Image 1 (cartoon, helix red, strand yellow):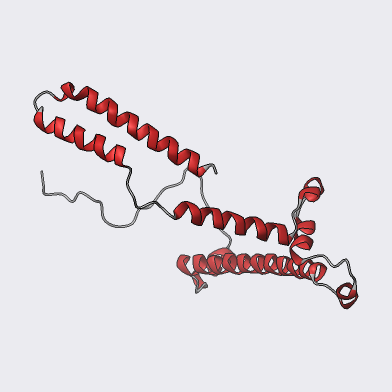
Image 2 (cartoon, helix red, strand yellow):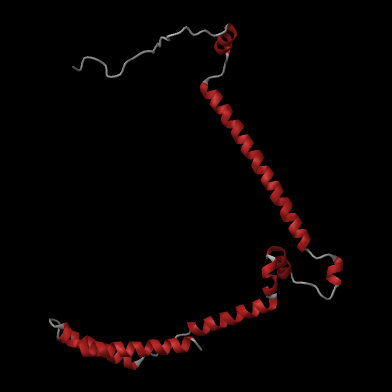
Length: 182
């Protein structure tokens, strides 16, 4: 049972139904060729890599040319610098990039900076928190905790304290919303 090998050894020879013949030139070129399968595969891989590198270089060149043309169209010339109606760099970029349907609504650099400054100031005002805690919420919380500790086996008996705490929290939330909308 275990006396034989599980894998056959040696080379396989296949017998064809019809005779196969190669010209002597083909046989001779295969026998004298120094290339092996691995060498051919490596050469093919090198050719593919060279082609990919060539295509990438073409893409880089075209993108560099496009960038140069955009830069030249946006860079002011000496005649443009002297004119009184000089556009800002941001508006020229917007004109070059923005579709014509949106060009009417582009904002100037100054108005955008003013908006950003206003938003920053508003954010800073929101960040300043009142350190004083709300006395009503603290009192309702303390009462609720005391009730739950006294009636630890019957927490549903603390429903009045829960409702009072919910009311105080709702009042505090409304106060916060009103303050945030100012």
